[in-house]
Every structure is written in C-alpha cells, then in structure tokens.
Image 1 (cartoon, rainbow over the protein chains, first blue to last red):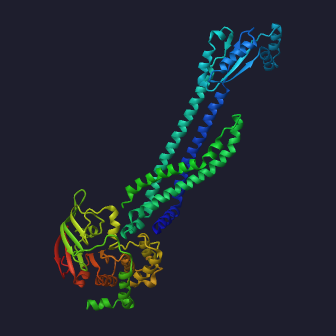
Image 2: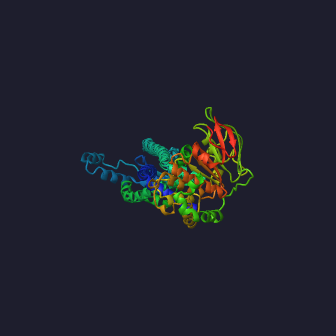
Image 3: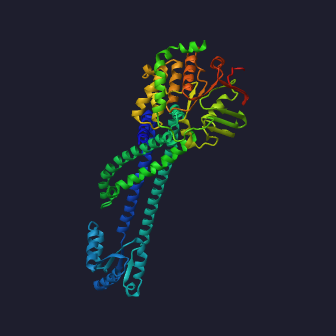
Length: 303
Length: 268
C-alpha cells in the first residue's frame, strides 16, 4: 500500500517536473479524442441524413383519366397489404386539380391552359411511401399486376431517388473513412509522442532510476510511475474532451434539428451512453499509451 | 602509526562513543530482512568466471575467487584490467559469459531480472562518483533509498538519523550534496549503502575522487563496518590505502587473478 502511494506520488512528480512535455502529450491525446468524438457526431449525422432522405422518398402513381376514386382506393388497399409499404396516400381527381392550381397559383398561363381544357384532366393519384428505400422495386412490381397496370398512366421514376440516396450513402461513408483515417493518424502520432515523452522522462530521471536500481527498488516500482503518468495524461485528456464535447453537442443539437426538420439525436446519443463512451475512449487511449510506454521502457529503461 | 593517525580523525572523535551503540542498533533492530537471505561458508564464490563484452572484449577470464564472511578484500590492478568488471559481477550489474557466481550460497550467474532487487538489498554498493541526487538533501538521499524499497515512513524517520550518525553527518542532514566535501559526500553514499544492513559492501574506487585526509576517513569507516561483520570488497588502485590496510589483496592483471595474498601489499 505504501509502495502504491509512493508510485502515485512519483507519477505526479514526473508530471510536474516535465510540465511542458506533459502538456504537449496531453494536447495530442486531446486532438485524437476530439477527432474520435467528431467522428461519432458525423456518424450520427450521416445516419440521420440517410434516414431523412429515405423518409422523404415517395413515388407517385398517376391513374388514367376516368379511373374512379374507388378503383384507386382498391389499388391503395392492395398496396397497403404489402409488408414493405409504410403508407399510401390517395389523392382523388378533384384533389389533384386543386393541388395543381395551388402549385401554379402564380403562373397565369398554366392556369389559363387548364381553363381551356375545360374539364378535369387529372385522374386519381397514389403517393406510396416504403418502409425502406430498397423495397420500392418490389412495391412497384406489384403495380405491374394487369389488374392495375391498364389503369396507370404514369409512374414516377424511382431511379432518380435511388441515385440520390446512393450518393448520400457514398458521401457519408467517405466522410466516415476520412474521419477514421484521421483518428488513426492522430493515434499513431500519439503513440510516437508518448514513446518520446517516456524516453525523455527516463532520460531526465536517469540519476534517480540509477539510484533506485542500486538500492534494490523492485522493477515494478521503477516502471509503474511511468505507466501511471501516461494513464494520468489519458484521464486528463478524456475529462477535457468530455467537458468540451458535451456542451458543444448541446449547443449544436437544436441547429441540426432545425436543419433536418426533426430531432437529430446527437445529444441524446451522448447523454444515453456518456459514461460508456468516455470510459471506452479512456480505456482504449490508456491501453494504446501504455503499450507505447512499455515499448519505450523496454528500449530505454534497462531494469 | 597509521592506525593512530586514523583514530585521530575529527569525525571519529565525535562519533566514536556512539558508533558501536548505533551500529549495533541498526544491525539488530534495523530493517526487515529481504526474502532471499545470504548464508554460506563462502560469502562470495566465483568459479571459472569469464566475462566477454561484445564483440570480443575481455572483461575477466577464468576467475576463481572465494571470499569468506566478514573478510576485507582489496581487489587491485591497473585501469582496464577488469577490477570494476569483477565488482559489477558481484552485484549483478553484469552477468558472466561463463562460470558460476555464488553470493551467500545463492547462484546469481543467471539471476532473473525480478530477483536482482532482492540481491541489491543485501549488497551495499559505493562508487567513486557517489551517485547522490543533487536536488535532495543528504537525509532525503538516504530516505529516498528507503522509500523506493517500500519502507514505512515511521521507520525511515528512525533509520535515517541513525545511519547519518554512523558516518558522523548527523548535523548536516539538511545540507545538499554540493554543500559537502568529497569525503562527506562519500560518507553519505556509504550511509545509503548501509540502510538495508548488507552482508556485503562493494566499494568501487571509493577514494578515487578524495584527498589523503578524506581517503583515510573513508577507509577507517569501511574498516569499522567490516569489524561489525560486513564483508567488504574494496576495488582500488590506491597503493597507500591497500598497504595501510594489511588485509587480503587480490591482484587482477589482464582480466585474470595474478595473485591472492592473505595479508598483502600493492605490488604493481
């Protein structure tokens, strides 16, 4: 117990004696952790973006003029029976012309053309929303059934949406890959800096280490302060990053919510697992740093 | 004559009456014994020991040396002849390339790293350059050695003044090494080496940096330590010191033992 307390004391002494070196190392650890946390935010955001786009994908199916609203409703019912369908909205011919008028209220020539036609040129319309974008192909195939296909004038081309979603997915996966690479690079630099810090620390304390060895200090007693010092760096970096990340997320979350027209969930993501997230980050950082410290000690601390 | 001169040393006059009392106190009630105790009829036994440094530099070759408990042995020889290598082999700073080294019946020829601290707690080591920590007072220097060995603070507070009294530096406990003379610094170094009540004291050129007066003081101190039962191995090339001692002298030449005389003189 006495030895453990002394190891802690020596670790703190090392920290203060190499204050600026400690600050540089901690700064690098902070950069690495910040990158990881930005990566986490990006992950939530990219998920949200994909979901946002997918939720807004709807395919309109236009029926021929003269098809009754009942026939359209029957078609909607048969689509609703499909598990893949989230929602089907039926727009009657009258609603369709009203919506057309509303949409082109400022375009007099368009409205004039409609007047010239004289009668309602629209048939009923179905607006189909799928549970998943991948299900659209299957849903639209169901409409190829001869029972409906003869009444359908036009189907919106789903390929455009698919391309858009694929593009969003590609961009988000690239952003993730970039963030991941950046975190990996920072982690590697951290490893090098920790290695160098320990090397310098051993050099600075070479006289004390020599005396320790001379008078029979155990090997673990000589090594432990260096390991503990590095864990201390990790702890300070994690606390700092948590103190910066959580308020930042709390400030940014409402802005993202406005942008995405609904809750994004970044704050709730961090709030739900705050201990687990930062404990895991601290654990991994400590493990990596301690590995680097062990390598440096093996190389330069001959005990 | 030499003995009279040594007895006249100022520090000894002051400490003389306390010396035996304090030293015996430390020996009897001092620090807890280490796990691996040294017991044997031969305190130090080297059998066909050779040390070759890479790529092919000779340290010592085929050394056979037996030192009994309580002996005072001087290892002499010119620089680069292997004296210090021999000393380093005794406290496992170096491992032999071949041969067997036994310390108190413990074969340390292939000693594991984790066991070296146990050995070092039973062998006091003193160097020419003192190896004191400049930012610590002399009391702190000695306390540091106890702290890193896991000794309790209460015990450290007891032991530090005792060993400082043994080396007659009780009144200078709060001074820093740079405020002391070379001889005083070496006495601190010896005091530090005594904290674990070692059965063996290895002194590698302890008087190398000292003037005649300080050399005498240090040698008198080493003799006193030996009189209380500690085996002393003195590595030196100081002719006067060896001749004044009138103890066993082992002469090393070209890495080999050239002579081993029970009550010898410096003959190089």
